[in-house]
Image 1: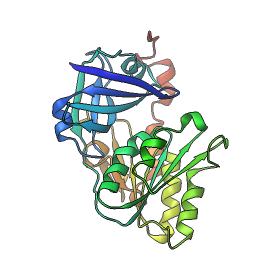
Image 2: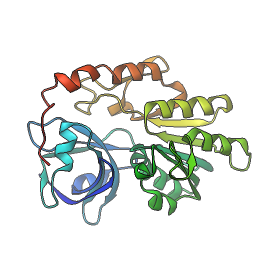
Image 3: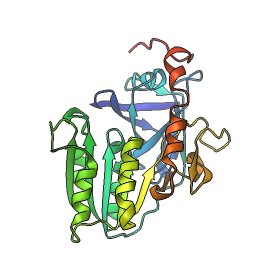
Amino acid sequence: MFEVVSNDILAPSLHRMVVRAPRVAASRKPGQFVIVRSAPEEERIPLTIGDADNAVGTITLFVQAIGASTRTIVATPVGGFLRDVAGPLGLPTHIEQWGRVACIGGGVGTAVLYPLAKALAEAGNDVTTIIGGRADAFIILKHELSAISKEVLITTEDGSMGRKGFVTAALADLMADPATCPQAVFAIGPVPMMRAVTELTRPQGITTIVSLNPIMIDGTGMCGGCRVLVEGEPRFACVDGPEFDGHKVDFENLFDRLSTYRSHEAANCRLNRQVQP
């Protein structure tokens, strides 16, 4: 059992939860994730480890409550317990001194981006962070990212904060100036955003790393649910990723796999039930 130490709301339906998991905290690296269940009968949910404090044995998870199982997880009160926190899983982010790096987060992807950007900054990179969201209420971690970034650029679709538009416009401006053009780009967020970033950097051959979010069940490569195509070859996001070279990812295949069960989730899934807050 894993105790919930804190549970805060960062944005609509998005919680930051600090959980006591000392063995995970001691061994996790940026880019890795855990599989969480709130109770034995619940669905397994993969969640990126947003931060860790090895001294007190805690990890930080960012949970978007969009389905029955994630709503159950975020409903766990401080002092309550999660049944399973298994990990760390997945390959760590490859961190090196690239020079100028652009870190791009869209929506809840900004939470996944944070440990990666922090590690890149600690490795001596000149980090510019671009955060995107539908509106100002969905812009998260701007203060935390400002502390580790040379600059934080914000875009919102409705113009309620920062620049009106998408993260790709801010990235295009960086790329247009030789003094700010990044040597590497890391993008985490909705699949359309990651694909758009990848296509923007492709002509200039800028290394572009994306973190993929296919359907995942066991997190060990046994079920095959998280299969993605990279350079035309099957890879499993849970053991070969979740991060891949964006220029080699088949995003159309990823779109198709993510939408496979969409029509069943609302009507037929056994987890489509009322969850008490």
